[in-house]
Length: 136
Length: 136
Image (cartoon, rainbow over all chains, first blue to last red; front, side, top):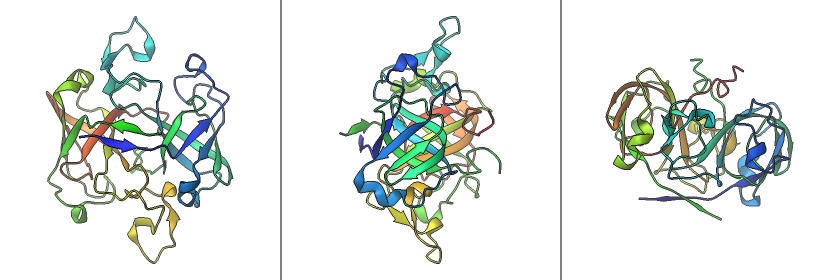
């Protein structure tokens, strides 16, 4: 059983390569633009600056055959199963990034602090719920 | 451009149909089991009861051609773009569920409050980070 995902857009960022990218969005990641495909424009219509959103990406440079890793790539730490880490290397390399919308210009959406590199495909965008943050 | 996702397991739940499922996990959803495929067992090895995790599912019953919806299916509310809602109907129907691990029995992992129906394919499992909840 397999399913097909189709990118709804891509990341436009000053981060051009993986070595320069921070490991998490709150570790010095720059602002970036999410550039959406024309055919999903209607799905964007309610997005506003100030919205807290979750960006789902496809980590196209990741390896899919890795099941255990050293946390944060630190060989001095014992290996862990990838489902207990945020390693990009995992069977389905879906990235999750919590950001804030800072501008909306048609199909271009600017967000704060995104650690994904330039050209990363975007799969989905969802609003943050109180439930996600464990507040209810 | 397209990518292929392959389920790493499936949900085993008393929720058998969509009409009975709550809209969010904190709205009366039952405990459920995540049953993983043999080939990803190593990726589970660090999971422990008490872990707060994000379950990524493939909402296999969703429609992918819906771009605008009435929030929570309420026709009295104005339509919104799906990227501003948590509707299952969206171009890439990836579900996100924040749950707590309550038991680990080999490749079977019990979690609290999961609103996904029985048989829902699982795509990924990640630990919750402080960043996701906006605490840093």
